[in-house]
Image 1 (tube, one colour):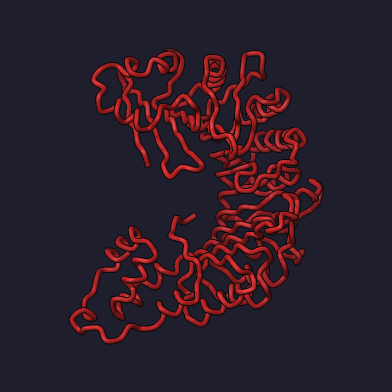
Image 2: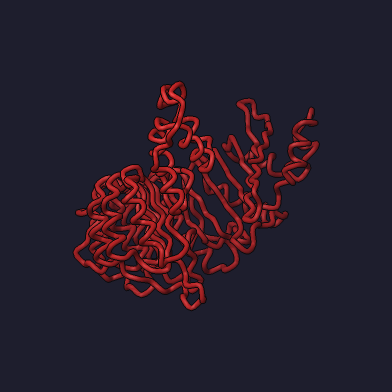
Length: 450
């Protein structure tokens, strides 16, 4: 997805940015900036400043439009959403829009869907049915994509990314991603709690030939969705990173996923399984022994796959020992263990957890990069930076807690860098601590705050 400044569509913004400024001096109007330079400036400029720049003269007004309207968010009062869409069309800025985030409590109306279909340059569409304000809607409430909306999607020939949040099906049962959106590169779809894994869902089977990335809910539909897209997808996220359904029982679906993974690995002998990156979101690592065993069984299915990057997130405890399912994943070179949930944002790396982590890392004999996010082992960012500036001796002098980890890395692994990340949900800053390993075996330290 593109990382652009999102623009909330307001009537005065549309009108002010589409009226050519008058009374400008000729000497200013005649000035020109190279398009490349203007684009570089725009990327570092917030929306208000970019809007002021556009009002400077007629040329800048036209030159800034593509950047001002590249990303649009339609949210707020649902009763006025049609007015917002009409303004985009009447102002003639629809051709500049590359990304639209439509977050409303109801699907697009027929009129708004028709307007959406005229934004022919759209590359990213996020359709989110936000939860009702009265709290009556639950995680299992899903809606069908109406005919008018699916008809609009069919006309977006440049669409690369589609995110359907809280939509559970298509009213038009003939709608097919492979047929109508063959150019689709990324697909994010929510959970489908009321649909049996045996149900045929033609909109995703077969998958678009261009599909490279899939984010799918962790439920009964996951196995079918993954199997349907396995021939093209290189990046796969399974779980509820965007929208959590707390009623989901992991054990109900882990075995189904393992069967799919086993069959795909076995079938890769004749038909390659191109998956390279796997992210298991909201998967527990130790709170439920039975769940953890099932998860290890799922990981063991990847032994002969081409997956080289593995990320597991959302756990609050970590327990692994040699008594657990034994497995070895030689293809994994990058491992990311992201602890914490939205409510509990850390995992304690105490002595017992360190022993478990060390045993777990031995299952990845060719691991080169390890990332531990939101573990309390990380020092306060301010303290880290102070110690980095003052450090003139061995790392272990300042971080005695790191000594057993460094010793383990030096003697038992091939890991060349470890990243400790601290991402706080309610903090404007993220901190990063990198421990690197030189060719002579010595370790060095780098710290960042972003």
